[in-house]
Amino acid sequence: MSTKNFDVVVIGGGPGGYIAAIRAAQLGFNTACIDEWKNDKGGPAPGGTCTNVGCIPSKALLQSSEHYEQAAHHFADHGIGLDNLSIDVKKMLARKDTVVKQNNDGILYLFKKNKISFFHGRGSFVKAVEGGYEVAVAGAANDTLVGKQIVVATGSSARALPGVPFDEDKILSNDGALRVGAVPKKLGLIGAGVIGLEMGSVWRRLGAEVTVLEGLPTFLGAVDEQIAKEAHKAFTKQGLQIQLGVKVGEIKATKSGVSIAYTTAAGEAQTLAVDKLVVSIGRVPNTTGLNAEAVGLKLDERGAIVVDDECRTNLPGVWAVGDVVRGPMLAHKAEEEGVAVAERIAGQHGHVNFNTIPWVIYTSPEIAWVGQTEQQLKAAGRAYKAGTFPFMANGRARALGDTTGMVKFLADAATDEILGVHIVGPQASELIAEAVVAMEFKASSEDIARICHAHPSLSEATKEAALAVDKRTLNF
Image 1 (cartoon, helix red, strand yellow):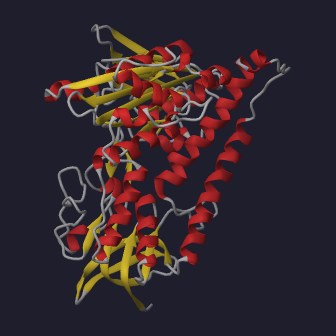
Image 2 (tube, one colour):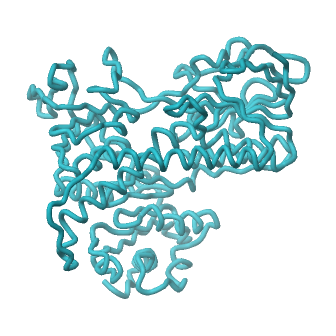
Image 3 (cartoon, one colour):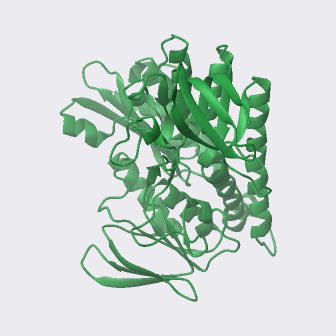
């Protein structure tokens, strides 16, 4: 076993880690990336939670289930008739696995293209050495690396309920929720967040009776209230049974499934019996096994790595990005931090603007937003103007047969600077990009209102919502 020396060693090959490694290599650094994810054959599967059990596979299943729902309920509106419609869950999961593997292989190709040394195994600190840090790789080769600069990008893992561990058979994390081999008759979800709503949507579309139990009294509290109400109305109409303000009690795995005792917001004791239960109550930073104490790396009470605004830890030459540090647990936030850290190592001025990070929930309708909500502006005492435009008045949405939702603009009352844009409706995840660009350049709602948008397109709803700020919509 030999010791290998690098300018930059990245621990973790998820969105933050592999992107940091690529940018470091582009900047001329001799770079290594360590990642322990394995595929079903034991081979490397870089990409972290996002690629393996998060963003990518969930979108694959959402797409498959959306096709099924369209065929079952909406194709007839287009004059398309289908007999004996069925769903092959095994094949659907196989397609999902193929999509995941394509992304895994793509990252391995990018490592090779950028001359990044990849080490398959778990990385952990050993000790500080002259000019850097020694990092052990526990894997097939048990390598030892020395890096002048270390970037920790170890991500996060699903939070379990106290005393209720995941068995990934009946009590599921996001991982198990993506591997359910047959459509459950009854599915329970604890937590009406992103993962809960997306996974609930997948199996509801395929025929499951889905009940969502949420402890908070409000639905999607981080979302603009007007947008959240519209989404709640749509999900309820689709058949998702959402109960808010509940207090979950004893959870027991039974022969036939799972029993959940809970108290409703009105104080009534209830029991929910389901075939499968998905617990999506948040995520925790992944620092177990990192051996942070060996080098004195500072962690907070949640186990997250403590960093400053530029992702520097308390140790010189050690950085951390993504889910393992403060801020939103979003893959694209991790990517931006990864790029910024690599550039800071090179003496450049990497930049991440937390105020213009977009958020997306890939349900149907999709929900996407950037900037501040109306309730945040009210709480801050900020004078603002609001403008909304419904998709029911948009020609392209009518042609798609999907007119649920709206676009909403919030702008400063005096300067007209865009303070927030909120969308619920078709392709919200794509439409939000225009708002992100506008806010990054400190545009006004008038700027968007005067830009020519293609007709017919969903993006016209964005233009019309901007016009609505000045109460001069043209098509509503």
